[in-house]
Image (cartoon, rainbow, N blue to C red; front, side, top):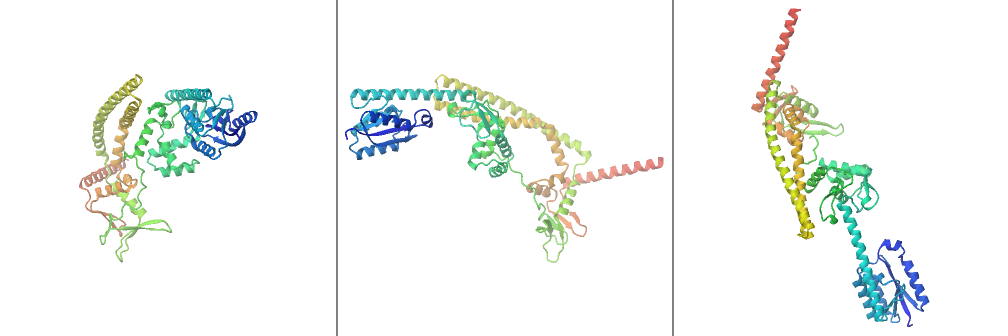
Length: 500
């Protein structure tokens, strides 16, 4: 009875379990010690992955059992650090056991708390175990910190990459999933919403939740960067291949944060852009629209009882586009118009160049501040919290700076193309109208015909009313130019006939 005991075993990590510190191994050693020294085992306590820093429910269960069974006077443990590798925590547990009349015996060394010398030796061993644990932890953290600061990610492998090697020698390559993630970023830049991106990825074999997709789209690793607590929040250039450019990544962050209205999903071409814009030539009522579902054919019609003004939308749209083409800029004015457009664009170019110069200067100043902040932190002039906060603020400003610089550079590189696009757009109203969203279609319609336009069912064509005066002049010039060219062509043909 006086040698009744409990046995305590614990492993705090899977690594300990797999490297000679298994519960079974500890149990066997404790059982052998008990048998060799005349102890009677009354129970077993402990378990896998019990916390090394806090007592946990398993310790509490053992203390409760000790209180109930007054015959148990000993607790056998393979080594005292199996209570906790935190010296203070382990000593508190041992003191608590001693307060309940329990003598702790270490099977590996036969040291016990029965004597003051034994207590002192056990406390010394626990202190050494904590020192060893802290030392290994510091080395581990220091190694990971060195990897991160060197641009090598040593955390969990991000989705979309394969990894070979460990620690500083780790190398990452983009796999097939990474190529799909690249598509996700591109779609986001085009303004596609997250649910549609999820559907597209799923159709290609990659299922991700809404939360997972957001984490992917906000992870700078995919832009070739590393950011971690071990880098104090600083963004470091990674040595792994980037899936998208840094500027593209920053643009995606703007879209996700809702700070820009630039990136929108383009709406589908409207089905009935002329609804209530066209009026019946007989009664002046606006035409409404409907669809014959069985044939999927669209129509415009007058709703007056007895009026048979009913025409297919396809025909109406085609003739409206042809009508708009009569307002195109004539060749005789096109060069003059282009010169005006180019002057406006190049005047803006000067502003863009000045803006680029200001942005470059701002970037240089921010980089100097970032460098100064690092030096001050390295010299110990500022603490880590101040350093981390300052770095985050400066890097956020640098990110915005890079986005603005990218926009300005893009504008500067497309001057000729922009001029061509403006001239082309203004000189092809019909094509512009037929390929635009509803809002722009209506703007073009209201610009040309503020009071609307009539549809004559007898002539099966339009009758214009109250057209825009400025555009009316352009149409007149265009028509006169066409008549003149036609007359010159006929005269030329006539002369050739006479000469022949």
